[in-house]
Image (cartoon, rainbow, N blue to C red; front, side, top):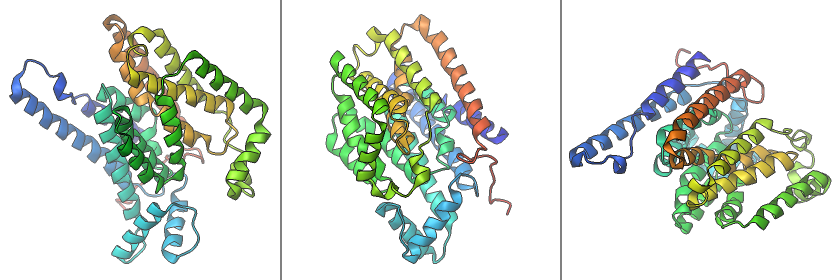
Length: 362
């Protein structure tokens, strides 16, 4: 636990040294070039720190052994439920090294997951240090220790948001298709993100609310539809039980939505990007509160509420300066509190990123 706190403190401190070059005014090209170098050094330092902790871990994560078994089944030609892209990489690594070096596979996925997350945060956020602070304190980095396929796909979604918002639609689609080679659930983004990018009227929110109500009153009907679409779930009782209502995610979405509405005229009214992120959070709220019975609903929800990494800094930037200081303090304190609660649950069997163990001294 102490190690994780040190990682968060050190990496956030480094992130605070990053400044966007186009925001440096009146200092001349020399200072701009200097800041460019500083940014690259800081980003490299953050990456090295996070990648080092991830690549040195062993037996840390609730599905660590499950993945080792999947690696073995893949190279042996046994049936696996994992996607083609994932299987291809595992096979290539094992064949190239002529052995089942599972630590290398975990290392490769950690390398690209962290790299893509950082690149996505840097090129999309209006305030990198705040976005990175949220990335760490909301536990997203530490959750990459689990379900490595999914978090690589999530990292690609974060990176691809930039292309969607800048109307590079073909690039966006290609990124999502690439991500689907590692976790096919990401394909829902092709529908949900394009819907969220549209300009919603008041009656769109009304329809969305009515759809949420149908989830509460017609649970059995939705489950039958789900089993028809995914017959592999029929005999998987542990999946059909779901994960229950995630009050934490509901509270997060509600808090962000309220903050947006409080400063509507400064953000939502004038920014298409802000409206896009806001509408993603509205969708996440409906999903978590009305469709909680869907197996692995959190995976779809995370594609939506990961937008908070960009939305919160955007709201802070656009609000009046006299309010910004106090809201920044509130959000930082909330982030720290959330991280403390996350660490208290980190040793549970469904998370199991504590205790942290490393192969370095084995």
